[in-house]
Length: 499
Image: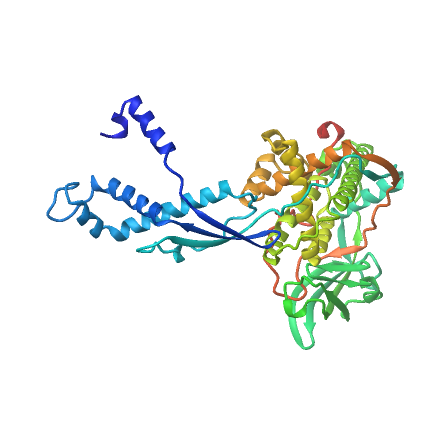
């Protein structure tokens, strides 16, 4: 009788029988090599193995085709002999799947990764119990620190006309024109150069016709050059200058971590930035503004929103510093390596959400890469604690939260919300977005119970020029959400559009 031919009572009986299937009588041993690692050894007794064999052969009997017998009419012993290998593979798969489910339900740990084990290396023995082992990363166990009533310093600032003027100049610069200059370069000018990095006589990496603005610091993914403006002071087209780049302790090129290498700049041209006039056409391109005054109002809003971001980040820093004070867990290097990308993704999304420019994001991204192990360990410890609070308070990200976040990112990038969502889903970034939403809810809750003291906010100077490359070579593929071209417009929005 086919399932479609069974009556309701029979279907209910089948479901009940399946629901009442006895659990495996597992023996589970859990070792903890570190706070975030568990090594699990699972032993399945022979009685359970034979029960699974019996069920598998029972299901096979009605359809087994054996030469000399009609389908489903062959003796069981013959079926067991002929189909032993196929049934063994089925039994092994069922035993592994059911036992892993049972381990997950019975053991008191919160997994943060998939189990690391090779099913192909597991065998069902002809006699005796079946044993297999696997490693899994888990959230560390800890007592939740007191988070109510914290004392928080909050940076505050009233933005003046000079702040708006400075930001307007930065916006106009993205629509400006680099014009050749037949003279010595100064700080703030641009050079077009062939750039190479060397360790002694060995070239590590290079790029052609790189356009670089002369600023005090030149940042790469894996290091930086301090006093870059002094290295390039007075340089002219046709000259070659050398600087010292210091690689970080987390550089992809392990052999050169923490070492100094030579950066060679073959200067092809010197250029100055010519800012455009604020015309009706440019105002329209910048976001449909009707006047320069309306544009300035939108800039004021952006400055206030970025101040809110800095207030949130500073509050988060103080909160998490207090909460993680006793979080001295040792985190596995492999976990840090893998999660460093996730933290980078989360940080870039947060910056993009708050309207920071691509140049600012690239500089921050390089800073995170240069200190990836320390910043990732800090972020992971923060996440574990904030996630615990979220669980206790039953915080979760719902459809409206995702919609609001994606709409805000779309507003800042000038893209459609559908395109932003598609890019996040394609890049596997929805989990990072979920963590960002939930952690922000927790921070808001902690802040609602905190005591505040206002302190002056001092914006950081734009003293870093950032390049998206590794000086020491052996760079990893970027997984950061797609950015716009450096020269592409970043529309600001009017007050009406922000609402």
